[in-house]
Image (tube, rainbow, N blue to C red; front, top):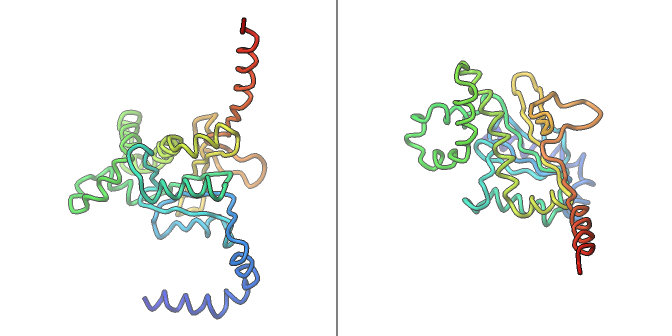
Length: 235
């Protein structure tokens, strides 16, 4: 605790005075983040740090394994954070960010380690699809490779769960939201992004177009066309 208390003292004495005007504005105008990041609770992965985000720029939800439970199965903090970010804050992007050397993924590969952690075991059940994909698609992979692949497949699986949330589905269909899947490699600082069109992870570009896992669908054009078709066939 001494380290934490010293950090608070440093913030109050040094960092806050440098950003006092920013905090004053945030306190008056409220928050207007552009993106929601769902990341692992791992202490080595700090979303604001790895994205160089200032206060007020990033809405963050952290949990073991960067998991998004399907909306029909679980109503809790993650689901509430998603709904609030999308509906109340109007974020335009949602990022699911996994990482290397993930303890949650290690536990899935070694279920005996969860014998004394029944709540964690139940929670990690939301990654069963990713685990099965790794078992069946990469049967000959070594243990270190399986861990890496599971962490990546888990990001893709959680993006699928994310689409079951009504607020997310609605914003995607009206072209107001995009979904992103990222993978952070702790040892190298490398960030990969899931390209939904190519079905693979690629290096996050320093500039240019950003790979998107699920692009906005803008389904409104279809409804206009449907109305025209119905009108043209009316007697």
